[in-house]
Structure formats: structure tokens, C-alpha cells
Length: 331
Image (tube, rainbow, N blue to C red; front, side, top):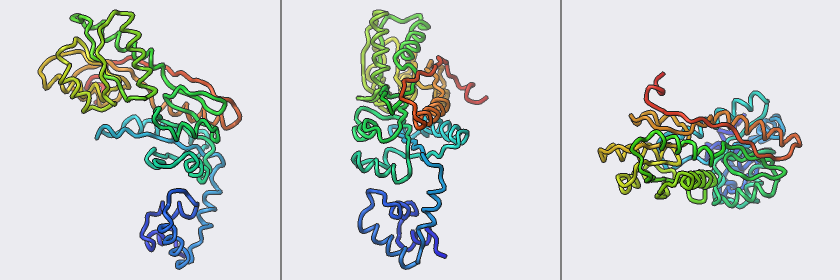
């Protein structure tokens, strides 16, 4: 009996492409679909095997829609923690979850995205890393065809919940702590913000500006796009003119610290997120520790609550200020 792999080999496509053709996913060219269907006919393959597999899944699957960080060559530690937390909680709740990366729906309009999700029996979705520029995904959420939980996005409606740390307060807390620990601080701050039009970036920036007003700080603002390289370049250009460097992410803090090391000068640097890579810079840095696995687990729990008929809500989870060093990484 022919298998789906036999069909893929004969048609010269991936197994996932055969599955998409069988289940009528969008964005499969007519030529590719024709080759797959011809192979199915020649091999007398029975797609009902796949259909039976799908029908055996628990109704109401949850999509984990993840925007991976393409600004760095480092392993995306945050995304892995998100996936780990979500999958673990889904197993506990007996919920079927489907990871979907932003790149998989890139170029689709909202109707095509909805059909793509519906073809996989998606009833709810947890969205990680959506920015204000992700117009299509925003419209999908706004149409409320799916119960949604948005991580780090402050949008709530009847079918949508938001979950996040208090980004504004956390940025104030870590910046204040770093400033207060610096005995030679004269009020000159270099702040390297995150992504333009990012919900998280705007919240963190508002916290920094609020602290600047409270402490009468002179703050020079530069956008680092969450990129280690861009933060490094900004620090090379402006680092020696400021007393302290506050970064809206740990990856940017790593870039800033490495630039300072190359310049052979010292400035206190703090980050935001609490990723383990920060410990390998060789310097201690303050940061905001977020438990991404726990946040993701809570998001899956909240999605199942919405799918059972509850209404959307805003959920604020705790954050912790920590000082990461190399010895923390090797225990």
C-alpha cells in the first residue's frame, strides 16, 4: 500500500506539501497541486488515512503562532522556552497544540490565514511577538473567529486575552536599580530601545521616559531593533559620552557590553529578559528575569478558558530583577 511519503517522492515535493494539497491549504500553486494529485492517482493512495488521523485529534486545537528573532544568529532561547511551556501545559490539559511560525503565513491575507487555521481544526491561538506592523494577524484577531491569547500585546476583547509582565514598571525598576548602584553616575543615560512599532518596545520606552522625568535624567534615545549588532554599533558611536547604557533587551545589552570591552572603557549596562547567553559576556549585568515557559503555560491555560466560553481579560504576571553572571550558567 502506498504511503504519503511515496506520493511526495513521486511528485517531487515535501510530505508537508502533500498534506497541504490533501487538506486544501491555501498558497499551494496549481502546478504543484496537479503533480501531487497525479501522484496520488498513479499510486492509488487513499487520503482518507490522513483524514482519519486528523479526525481522531481532539476538537479545538490551539495554534502557537511564533515570531522568531531573525536579528541574531544565536539560538532563539525565548522561543524555545515559549514552546516548552506551552507543550508541557497542553499535555497536562489534554489539548492538541500546533506550532506555526510567522514565516508560514507570510504573504497571506486575513481570509487565507483563517482558512489555513480552520483547515487544521484550529479553534484557539496563542500569539507570540506580534507587532503593530503585523496588520493581517491583527485583523484575524479582531475578527474574533478564533479565541486568542496575545503574549506581550495589550489588546483585549470578548474573544481575546492579553498576558505579559508589567513592561513599563519592569523597565523602570531595572534602570533605577542600575543607576542607584553606580556611584559615578552624573545623569547621562544612553537608552537603546527595541523594535519600532513594537508593543513591548513602546511600553518599555514609556517606563524609561517616566523614570527620566522622576529622576531628572538626560536620556539619549536610539533604536536598536533588538539587534546585538545594532546595539554594538550604537555603543561604539555614543557609549563614551554617557554614564550608563540601558538596553531594552539582553541581546542588545550583550552587543553594548562587547563594544565597551573592545573600546576598553567601562560603563554599567543593563538588559531585559533574563536569557542565559547574558552570563557569557564575562561581565555582571542587571536584567529583568521573565519566566517565559510559565508565561506560555499560563497563555495555553487562558486559551482553553476562552474556548470554554469565558471572556477575554488582561493578565499581568510577576517579574524579577536579577544580576546574571557566568557562574549562574554553569551550576
